Length: 240
Image (cartoon, rainbow, N blue to C red; front, side, top):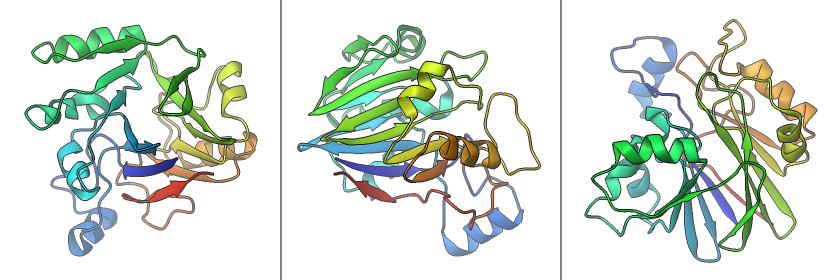
C-alpha cells in the first residue's frame, strides 16, 4: 500500500491569490505549493482517491495520470469534492464511497454525471483493493464529516479530514497506533478555529493516539513551511 499526499493545503491553497505574506512570497519565488488536500492510495495495482480537490487535474498530471478506480468523499465542502468533475471525458467515472448525507449533497451537484454511489455507515469496515477501510466520525460542525482508516497487511493509516480535536471516543479508538496519522492542522498556535485543529491540537492528538509517525495537512498559508511534521505535496509513504 502506497499513500501519496497529493495536496496539503486548505480551501484557498498556498500561495493564496493576492497574498504577500511570507509563506505566499516564498511559494511565488520558489514554486512550492500547498494544493488542496487529497490523498492517493495505491493497493494491488488499483488506485483510490480520498477526496477530489479542486486541484485534481494538476494533481493527477503530477502523479503520472493514474486511472482512479474508486473515490472516498470525507464531507461535502467545496475543497474536498468539487474536483470530481475533472474525470469527465478523461476516464470512466469512478465509484464513490461516503456516508449517505455526503453522497446526497455532492451527488446533487454532480447530477449531470453518471457514477456509482455506495453509502457506507461509520465504523463499519469494508474491503477495497485488498485493504480494510473504515470511515470514522469526526467533529466539523455543522457539516457531517468522516475521517478514514486504512488497514493493509498489518499496517494502519489514519486520516482525520477536517475536524476539531473533540473526536468521538470510538473514533479515537480506531485512530490509535497508526503507522502514520495524517491530521487536519489549519493554523498555527496563535489561532483557534472552532471546527478545525491548530498545529498544537494536531500534534497533541498524534501523541495521544500513539501514532508511530504523523503528517500535518490542510494547512493554511499562515503555517510556516518548516513546521515540524508538516506534510509536503507529493510526499509518499509505503506499507508494509
